Image 1 (spheres, rainbow, N blue to C red):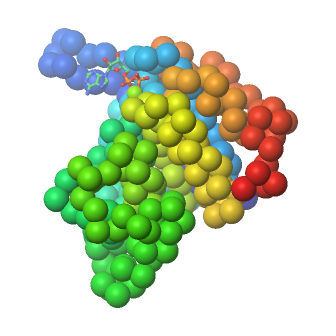
Image 2 (cartoon, helix red, strand yellow; image 1 turned 180 degrees about the vertical axis):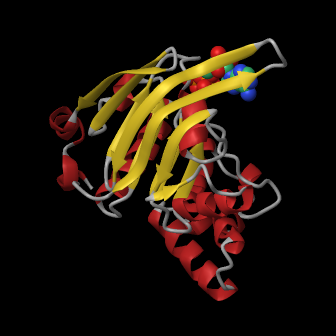
Length: 245
Ligand SMILES: Nc1ncnc2c1ncn2[C@@H]1O[C@H](COP(=O)(O)OP(=O)(O)O)[C@@H](O)[C@H]1O
Ligand SMILES: [Mg+2]
């Protein structure tokens, strides 16, 4: 758990420009360090800046100022192309609304990040099948997204997030569109990825109860980190650790 640093943010400020003179500072100086193998949640009320922070962690957007090193690489000097390449290789995204490609099968969706990474076809298919197996979706590889339930879509999305063996899985309200039983299955899957696949997971949620299952709870309020709590003991009690898998 005391691995290398995968996320290192210093004094990150994010301002949205809505045309001068209207500028809106949303993140007011975020310092955040996450080590390899951690399962962290970022909690906060709606509008507190969670998705803005996720977009920065995921290199989908750039900070207005501040330093961000992703897996040891300074992102501020990177071109947009370098940034998208890094993003594709280092980060697996899971969204509330799944964001699967509608005209692609489950297998095709999982293949996509590997296609962008230039992985040969046979290898892509082999790995996609293994990942669909991991999320218990092997029976559905030829299904289109509209032929899958919400929970099934999210499992495919999680398999896709794992495609390039990323340093970080970044999930923004991944259970937000699911009923509680299906949400439970998705959370269990994250625990499995964390414990068995040793993935670093950043779970963004407004749900304190879900956050309580993770090893570390970071609370964000009005664009500032106001609490950063070691929650390992409670997480272990709630989820039970390795024996539960
Ligand atoms: N692209 C944008 N342009 C302007 N304001 C934005 C944009 N994205 C988010 N915001 C504002 O930033 C604040 C934080 O939003 P967000 O990061 O989505 O919060 P959360 O995910 O915690 O609900 C909100 O006040 C929102 O209106
Ligand atoms: Mg949000």
